[in-house]
Length: 369
Image 1 (cartoon, rainbow, N blue to C red):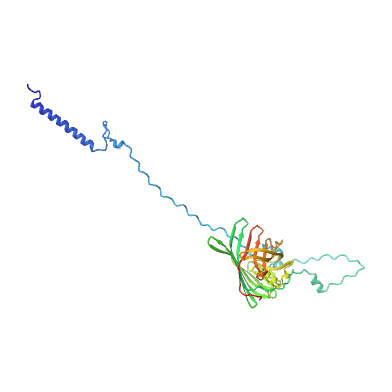
Image 2 (cartoon, one colour; image 1 turned 180 degrees about the horizontal axis):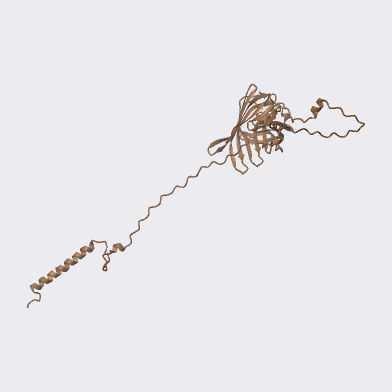
């Protein structure tokens, strides 16, 4: 029986099978080299692969670098206006008012009309020159005291300041004086602490003589932070007090002092005779622009706490005086330490207060001068 597959047909079948196999292998090779299967396309459309349709994984954004916090600005707070011996002077009621400026004529004196004298009474005789002098107004005088100037020393004070708005400050003050024959030199400085620094707010210097009235200043200077230095001059031969900061002039009174010497002059009065610490103690004081009489009242014995211990003291106060000064000044003298001031407090009219309390005493020499 003859086969239906002739040799010719078998060759055609084998050749066709090989062609199909080759096409299948070629198609597998082409699709294996791509990232995805090609999709069918229409006429005029570009070939789009499956890989192009899949979403591209998002790349994580880099983390932002941390921003350092802003550095705080170091702003210096306003400094207090330290007043070691505040006065708030009113010039109109000072002891000797400033002289009138030249060029202004003085008004003529007005004579009071003479009363009608009775016809039967003779005219009164004229007053002698001495009586007329006694009837004229006199310049107020201050009381004279027996004094014993305290020996040289350096006193260190702790300063506590409270402003009118409640702001509090702390610092140190130093009062030092030396004596040589009949002369003295004195220096007072006070400052506050800001962060790690100390800022001087006021420096007072005083130079002069020592006599039977105690300290007799010749020149006082005052330098405040941010202000020009001022000077007060005591012309004892010319009997005048003048000021670099004003045109005021005053007659010198016995025992006149400046702002630096006031506490130690009180000590000299107590050392001269403690019995003098009674009633009022009047003292003419030349400040940086004007002068006035300070009137102190002896408050009496008082025990106070200090960094060097509990001390028995005598408190002396200068209350406000209408027409002269509005502030209050309190000074505590220690008999056990030669009556030197161990505490000083100034209270201003606006509520501000400064307290200086002794923290160290160094006596340079013992005994009286």
